[in-house]
Image (tube, rainbow, N blue to C red; front, side):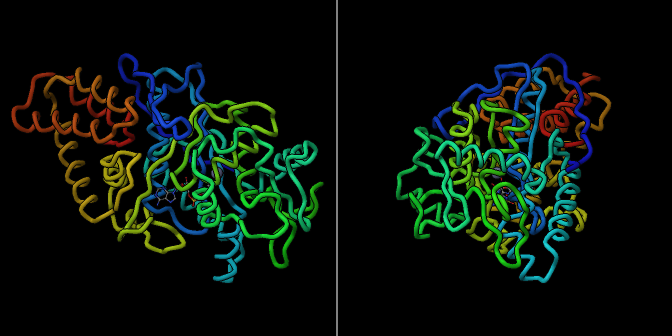
Length: 408
Ligand code: 5CA
Ligand code: ZN
C-alpha cells in the first residue's frame, strides 16, 4: 500500500543524543538503536472509523522516536500495518450495510490525510493485512510443522506452550492475561483449545465473511500473525522497537513476540517494546467501540491548526494516561501563537542552550513536556526583553520543526 507524502525535516547543527526509552519487557529504561540503521514497527489502525486523538497521540510518540534517531545520525526503517481485515471492521461493515473494502479504503485514506496534516513521518513500508496474506501463510505452515500450532474445526491456533519466553513482554499474572485476552479479541472459553490463552493464527471461512484460498484452506489471518509477518518481512528479528498503545501490550505484543520467536527459533523479536498511554474522554479510554471520540479530521474541519493539535499531544508525557479536554486545545493554541510571534522577530535571545536542552529532554524517555517548557522559556524571554542574536529565531523554529514536528 502507499503511505503518505514525506515530511521535510530540517537539518540541525551538531548531533542529538542516543534515545533512552522505557521498555515494557524489562520494566526499565534502555538505550536504543546501537547500529547505523534503526528499525521501528508500529501497530497501525483498524480502519473502520476516523483517527481519534488517542491514535494521534500514539503515532506522535513514535514520530518523536524517529526524529530523535535521525537527529542522532541514524537511518530509520519505519514499518506500519493497516489491519484491513479483522472482526471489528467486518462487524462495522455489516452493521452499516457497507462493503468492508470500501469502508477500509475510505478510513485509511482519511488516516493518511490526518497523518500528513499532523506532519507525521511516513513509514517506508505501509502494509495491509490482506496484502500480507502471502507472507502469513508460510509462517503459519512453519508453526504447524514445528508442532507449535494446531487445528480446531478448520481454524488454526498457536500453542503458547511452545514458547519458553511466553510472558516476558507483558510480565502479567495468568489471571491478568486471561482478563485482557477475553477483553481484547481472544476466545478463552472455546472448547477444544490446548490452552485458554492460545490465539488464532488462521480463521476458516465463515458465512458472509471474506476469505482467501490458500494452502491453509479457505479463510483469513488472525490478528497477531499479521504484524509478525509484516515486521519479519521488512525488519527481520531483533529490530529496535515494537511500538503501539498500552492496550496492545497483552495479548497483541506478547503473542506477536511468541509467534516470531517460535517460528524463527531466535530471540528476541524486538529489542524494546514501547507503549504509549491511553487517551480518554469523560473518564473512559477513547475508543471506536465506546464512541467517545474526538476526531483529528473533525478538528481540522473546524479550522484547528494541526500544529496546535500536535502541541496538545506533546504537552502530555507519552507514558501517562490522560484525558482530552477542550482546555488542552486552548492551551496549545495559545502556545502556538506565542511561539510563532517569538520566532517571527528578526533577532532574539541566544538559542544554543535551547537546542541542547530540547535534545536532552527528548532523549530522556521522550520528555516532550520538558522540551515544551524549554521553548516556552525562550519565547517568554523574547517577549519580555528580546535579544540580539539574529540566528536565534531560525534555530528555534528549525528545532521545533525537526524534533517536535511542528511548523512555526
Ligand atoms: N490494528 C490494531 C493494531 S495491529 C489496532 O489496535 N488498531 S486501532 O485502530 O485500534 O489502534 C491503532 C493504534 O492506536 C494502536 O497502536 C493502539 O494501541 C492506539 N490506540 C488506540 N486507542 C488509543 C487511545 N485511546 N489512546 C492512545 N492510543 C490508542
Ligand atoms: Zn499490530
